[in-house]
Structures are given as structure tokens and as C-alpha cells.
Image (cartoon, rainbow, N blue to C red; front, side, top):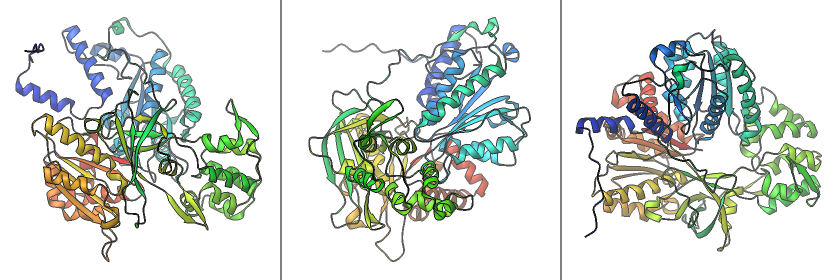
Length: 620
């Protein structure tokens, strides 16, 4: 007989255990570590003591008695809003720098910020990303709406600075950061220094912005040592933190296991199911996380760009402390598919084109939107010919960033593998073939290929900690990918916990049932074995009137609202530019109609769900 492990009996009653579960449900990793440090501090002092700050999760958290708080020095608040984690990482790094310099700082996520405190703030740094067509991150919607509304206070005493993160291939580049920057100034706050607008190469803007932020904070807060009573600290119960072996800067070479087309060959879309091995990498992930793929550009596209500009691909070009041939820069180091506004500005100086100049003028927003949305780099070079030299061309292009794909598997089901669902971009426009860099890279991999990858955590898109909660998943097209992982995970949990799992409801849509029903057999099996309880389908082109997932939501509105009102979690994945807006509007209308709420109350309701991590979106 094997020895039974020692068990520590809980000192709590069932009621208190339930309260603990409610307190911790939906908290991200940093919040849980922060809470563990706070509780440890309470235990050490044997009395309740309020925390004076909330900083990065692997640093000491100062404690102060209430009387001491009143005498504490001026404090900096670093507020962040993040969808994919980039803004969060920048804000955490900034807070660590500030604390390392001896400054009094707290770090707070936008949906955890008490807006009533804004009137009392003296120094505020905002780090926030922009999603899709100018939308705030999900964790910032409530804060952004409050700041834009009538309840926002006058802020004559506030000094602030804003760092925006975005993608300059979208027309509304860093629009949320710009709106917050302008609104704070409109409310009477004083801008300490110019807003930073960081593109995909975040560090190029974030690093100098952060240096200026530190200098300004030092001048304003001074670095006087805090009073003696602040000497007591609590270190969160985290243990040693190790940097991952494989990361964005050093991806793991994952062997290709499978590359299968899962859309019909006579259909209009080429959708691939791709399986990669993570064996011996040490990489782990959770359903909802993303896989970063460090792809290369199509060689044929590199040749086309070189031919159009009449440049020698073998010429050595030095930039950013590196020297490579021009061909190597374009193949592996620079973005040559999507077009960015900064590149268009530089190209316009050389092209001398009235049409391009008009698109870049303040009243040329529609033309600019078309350029950014419809043209690839080669199209711009052909439509507006110009002369470039190799060095200036490389300097004008953005760095080639990894492409992020929602993971379509759970390690509880697939072990040391990771699965992706990839739509291969391949179409004719302007008389030539266009392809997507990453999707074409993946679709054309040889059987023995290795793919450079890393895991990108997405803590805002996690299954409920309580497996008994119901889950509603809305994923048209390849947006269904993470929900394959969700269902795999819930099935495994159900098996382990002898059936103690909540219900699962999936809304899926695509153009045609016969050609585009992704993972059809798997969903049918899940329905049969009881892992998937409801499946609503919307095939938009199979009838005269187009039907999308938002129509399915409205049709099932009464039951959908009942699920949500009784604690269900809602997840949305897919296109940010239209689908996410339409689904959000449908959910709001459902809350109005079936919850008896006003439009404003319905918006507040959804914002509260988002703050509680019960309404999460992974949109792109």
C-alpha cells in the first residue's frame, strides 16, 4: 500500500472557504501574488495593516499604518490598460524603475482603479494600448468611458504623461492614448512631457519615454527616504522567479507534426490546422494563451520589392548596430507586407504624388484608411514610384514582429504539443498575387521543418477558476481556435473531477456549411458526449439574407441573458474591426431587452462583467 500524503486541514469554515473562492476568482497572477504578500504581512504583524502601494509582483510591498499614510510623500500612480499584455509589461517595468529609484509608486490596472480617487491624484502615468479600429483594451473600457463622461472631475492639481501602444498599419494608431492625453489636459491637468506613441517595435519609443518619465518623477517626488515606520516590508510568496528559457527574443525551434487543410478544397478559404511539438522545451501554456511565430517574408515578395526599387539585394546595409545584406534585412528583419503611416510619410517625400499627399492630409482619412487597409508595400511602391537608397529604405521600414496566433489546444489533452488554426492569406489584387507573411510561411512549411515559437500569456482570457461555472464562447471563423482548447480542457477537467463542470455553449459562424465548418466532427462528438451543451451556427452565405453570429445571439437572447445573469462567463474571439463591435452591440441589446436596463446601465453591466473577468475578448 502506498503512503498517503500528509494533508493540512483547513482552519476555515465552509462559509469562509466560499468567501475566499469568491475573492480570488478571476484574479490574475500578479493580483494573487500581491494578495498572498498582504495576507503574509497581516499574519506577521498580527493586526490588519493597509497596504500603501501595489507594485510589480516580484518586489517587496511596503506597509504603512493609517497615521503614517497621511505623512507619506507624494505618490506616483502608474495606471495601465492592456489587451495582449504588452502595455502591462511596460507599466510593470516602469513601476520597477520608479521603485528602484526610491520613489513612492503604485501600479494599478485600469479596471481595478477606483475612479473616485482621480480627483486626489497628483502624479499619474498612463500606459495603454489601442485595439482594432481605435478601441480601448477590455480592462480599460470603464475607465475610458468615465474619463470621457460628465462625471470626470476637474484636475488642476494633476500632472500626467501618457504612453500609447498600437500598430501604425491601422488608421487609429494609438488613438486611445491620444484621447486620454487630450482629455486629461481638457480637465485642467498639466502634461509633463509629450505623449509617446509606440509601434510594434515598442522599445524604440517606450525606452526614451520611460527615461524621461523617471527623470520627471524624481524631480517632482524627490527621493527622500521614507519615514522609519515604513521599514517593515512584505515579500509576496512567489519563490525564485526565473526568466523563461525560450521567449520572443529567443524562440524555440518547434518541429512540425501536422499541417492539414480543414476547409474544403473547393471553398474560398484555405484554413490550416497545424500541430507543433514542444517536447524538451519546457514551454507550457493554458487555454486562451497565444503562440508567437517568428516567420520570414516570402522570398518572391523580397525579389519584387528589390526589382521595383532597382536595388542590389547583396549590398551590405548597417542599421541599429547590425550589418546584413539588403536581401537579408527584407527577408528576416523588416515588415514588407503591411504598410504603416510613418513609412507613407517618408515615401511621400520622395514620390511627389498629389494623391499620396492628399491621403496624408488631415482631411484625407478615408483615402489613408484605404491605403493602410488595402495596399501592401509593393502596391505602394508601384502606385507611387520613388527613388530610395538601401540605407534609408531599411531605416524607414518597421521591424518584422512575430505574428500571434490563438492556441487551439489544451495541454491536458495534447501534452507536449501546441495546435493552431490558421487562415492562409492568398488573394489577387491590383493584378498581382498577395499573400500574408506568417500564414504563407506556415502553409508552405516542409514536413521536416522547425518553427521558431514562444508562448504569450493571456491572463485576461482564461477559463473560470471554478469549473462549475457556465461558459459562453463566441468565435466565428478562426476565432473558434481558443474554444477548441477550452472544450478540450473542460472535458479533461470533467473526467478528473467526476463530472463537476459547468455547461458550455458555442456560437460559430463562417460563410458556408459545406466548406467552412471548422472542426465539425469534434463539435459533434462533444455534443454527443455532453462536453458541449449547445451549439449555434451562422453560415452567412447559405441563404439569401446574410446571417452572422450576432444574429444568433439575438435570436437566443432570452436564454443567453439567463445564463449570464446566473454567473456564466462570456468569451469572444476573432476580428476586432467589425465582428467584435457587432457582438458587443448585440450583447448590450440583449441586456436592455431581457434585463430591463437602459442603454447606459447595459454598458455599465458589460463593463462590470469585463472587470470581473466574466466578459473577455481576444480580438485582432
